[in-house]
Length: 328
Ligand code: PBG
Image 1 (cartoon, rainbow, N blue to C red):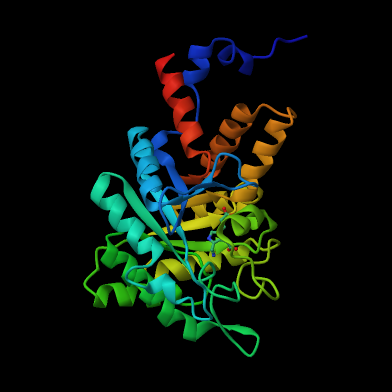
Image 2 (spheres, protein in one colour; image 1 turned 90 degrees about the horizontal axis):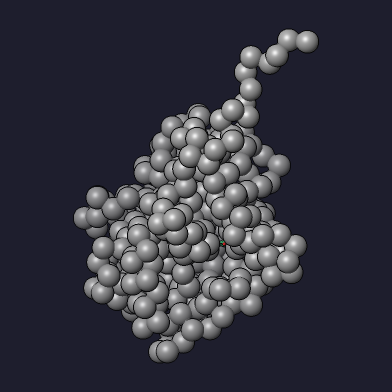
C-alpha cells in the first residue's frame, strides 16, 4: 500500500496554518448595511420578520450611522418609507422625501460613511409596483423618466452612489444621462443587474410595505431558472454605464455570482436579501443551527463565489465578530 503523497490534512491541523492558506477573506471593508428610514422622531420600530432590524426615523438613524461607521463598515444602503403613496410614487423624487432628508442628515453628521441610495418606486407607489402602471400593466419607458428624477434628487441630497433596483429596461442609461446633464458625471451607479423575481424578498416587503397590490414582479424581475440571461442583463447595464453590477439574491445564486465575476471581471456586488437573513435568524433562534457560524459561512461563501461587495443585514454582527477575531 503506497502512502498518499499529498495529504491535505497537513495544512488543516494548526489554526495558524489554516489561516495562512485560507483562500477567501471576509473583511469589514466588503460590507454594506441596508437601513430603512421613516418619517417622524424617536422611532425605532422593530421589523418582526427581520429580528434585530428596525425602521428608523432620521434622528435614530443617525445614531446607527455613527455606530456603523465606528465599526469600520464603509457604506449604508438606504431605503425609505414615505408618508403617503400615490400612483406615480412622487415622494421618491421629492426634495424633502424621506430618503433625501436621511441622506442630508447622515452626510452632515457622519461624512465619512458612504450613503448608497436604492432607486426604485415600489415603496412609494399605491399599487406597489416598481414602475408606472397603465391598463393594469407595468410600463417600461414612462417609468424611466421618473427613475432618472429619483436618482438626480438623491444626488442633489448628497448621496455617494445610486443603486437602481427596479429592473426596467434601459434604466441605467436613462439615469446616467440625467445625472450627467445635472452635472453629476462623477456619481457612480451600482446597478441591480441580475435581480431575480424571488420569494426571498418577503421580509423586506413587510418591512418596507412594498408588496405589489395586484399581480407580481415577474414581468420585470428575472426568472430564477435563468443564468445566461443574467450575463446579458449585466452586459447591457455595463454598456449603459453601470460602475458596479449586482446579483440578487446571493445564496441561491452563487453560480450566477461566480459566472459574472469570471465573464466580466468588473466590481461585483451581491445582495444577501431579507429572506436569507430571516432563515438564519429563525433557525438560530430555534436552536437549530449556530447563528454566528452560519452567518460567517454564508457571507464567506458569497465572497468565495466572486462578490467583491456583500450587502447584508448581518453587517454589524459580522463586523463585531471580525473585530473580535482580530483582537483574540
Ligand atoms: C425594491 C427592492 C426590493 C429589495 C431591494 N430593493 C424588493 C423587491 O424587489 O420586491 C429586496 C431586498 C431584500 O429582500 O432584502 N425594488
